[in-house]
Image 1: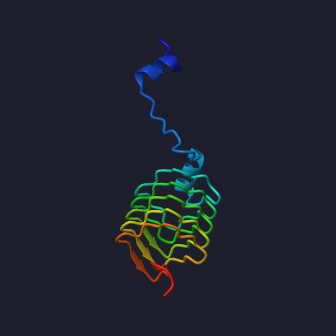
Image 2: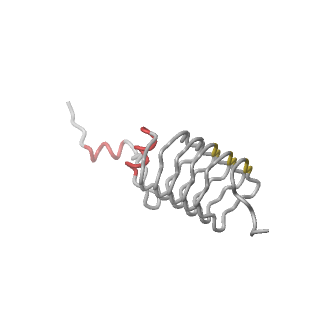
Length: 144
């Protein structure tokens, strides 16, 4: 019987290893997807495209530059999370909590934001192109 070493095996089977994107902690991504909770996690730059994140607990998580395109964040708790530069294009946020979250430079193009708590959130230079905002106190423009 011939033994195959790991080195030889790596030649036969291409590696399918996902390297962290811009600093995300792969263990934190796995924890989030398996448990639905990752308080204070490092998910900076994580690709969570089309992820079902219903009811997740991401309080104080670092989601800077995260890709949340078409993600379902219904009932998600993102209180104090840093979403600076995050891509939430066509994301779905209903009854989510964005209290004190940093949403600077976030992209909400075509997102659906319904009945979401945003008190204390930072909205500097946010893209709301064709976003549907219902029952959420986000106003466009300065004071009247």
